[in-house]
Every structure is written in structure tokens, then in C-alpha cells.
Image: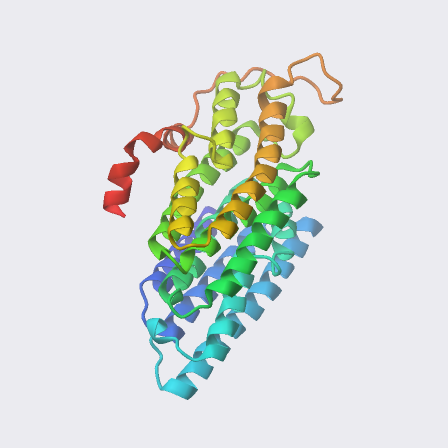
Length: 346
């Protein structure tokens, strides 16, 4: 793709995201969401492969439907209350329609079907954008409207997302699909807490973005799209693979790594809010996610030759690791000790 075109699309993504997260009016927020959708479509379909075109089509249809529901929800609320302000969502029907729209935008169960397919049809870098940057505007809208939304609906969606994200990820062999189901599972954790502590949901999103970016960029460095390819990468970049193991365990939420912090705080907050049963269920469901992260980690680091894969052994890569990967992986592993400072800032 032309560098100038890439620059235009990158600027449009930044503009759309900024537009949505900084607006108070529903129409302006909707405009930002539309700019985002139109800017990411050429990036998804740039390879001209049938799978990429299919992914772009699916993404467009789902996002267009979700944007129409956002607009319909805000118009219904304005019709009944005379308010276009995002924080003044009070009509029950509007709240329910908006919950559905944001669930479609984010890929929460039962509106998750499009996300693994779209991620599988995209490159790793576009997959990273879809899993992190493109979810920021809907998460912001969820944060702003959280006092108006029904906690019971969000909790049901959250537990189903954590369950399905874990179950469906167990038998996958493609790294992008595994990370897609990982994203659905993490969104469950954000959705369950957003009604009780919106700031905690936002903190969870920031840390999830950090860890997911580290994993995506590491996989992109070693060009691993399948588990069978991942098995042969130890010889190519041993140090990066060793760090990838720890980053995956952090994403699974094991102490004393960064990923443990949001899970710990969410379970603590849910217990304080007297929904200990939901906290117990979602904590047990996170064990499913732990299994497929361990599977990825096992394939990346513990499966040394000789083994049964048919892939050729890759050449040792003597190039230095990307600085961005180094910074993100370090943060993905070492933020737990400074959690009091993080909580004070948030």
C-alpha cells in the first residue's frame, strides 16, 4: 500500500478515536465511530486475498448495523427526554438498544461471531489495531453511559463472554483466532465491572491493550501465524520467545505479573458489591483462558527439536529486538509492584 495512503488512514483512525472519546453529543460520537470504521476497512482488505475481502465485508456490515443502533438509541432518548448529551441517557429502551450496539461494536457474547473471522482475515498489525485501538471508542461510550445501563444484562453478557472466549479458544491452531477469543474473554472482565466501578474497567482495558500489543508485536517479529510455525521459532529468536512465554502468562493473569492486577482488583470490587457468586464464576472461567495461553507458551518455548512438526527449522535471527516490543513486554511483566501508584493516578 502507498505510504501516503497509509498515513491518511492512520490519521483518520486517530481522528475518529479522538473525536468519539472527546465528544459530549451523540451525533459527534457517532461521526467518530463512522470515521474509524471507514479508515480501517482499506487496511483489512489491502492484501486483496479473498479471506481479507471477506473479513472487511463482515466488519463493515457488523459495524454499520451497530452504528445504526447507536444512532437509533440516541434518537429515541432525545425524542423522549430532549437530551442529546451522552451522559443523560435515561430512557429504558434506549439503554437496552445501546447495550446491544456496544456489545456488537466490542464483540461481546452473543454478538461475538464476527470478531475471530475478521481477525483471521487480517494481518497481525491490523489485528492488533482491531483488538485495541478500535475498541477504545466503544469502551469510552460504555464508561460514560455505565450508570444508565442494567448491571444484570452486562453481568450475563460478561459471564457468557468469559465462558465462550475460554471454551472456543481451546481447540484453535491459528494464533490470531486464539488472540481473538482471548480478547472476548478479557472484554467479559471489563463488562462485569463497568456498572460498579467504571474506572476499574478502563484500567483493565489499558493493561489488556499493553499486554495484547506486546504479544501481537512479538508474534509479528517472528512471523508466527500458526502453532506449528510457533514450534520452530525458538531457534530464530530465543530471547524473544522466552519473553513471549512470560507475556502470555501475564495475559492469563498469573501473579506476580502485570495481568494479575486487574483480575485481583475486579474480584475484590465484586466481592465488596456483594456479587461474590459472579466473581467466583468468572474467576473459574479464567482457568479456561489460562489453558490456551499455556498451550501457546508451550508451543513457543518448550517444544524444542526434535519434534513431529513438518515445518523447516528457521534461521537464527541476529537482528536486535524492536524497542517497542522491549518496552511493552517489560511493562507487561513488571507493573504489579507499582500498583499503588497506578491506582493513585487512575
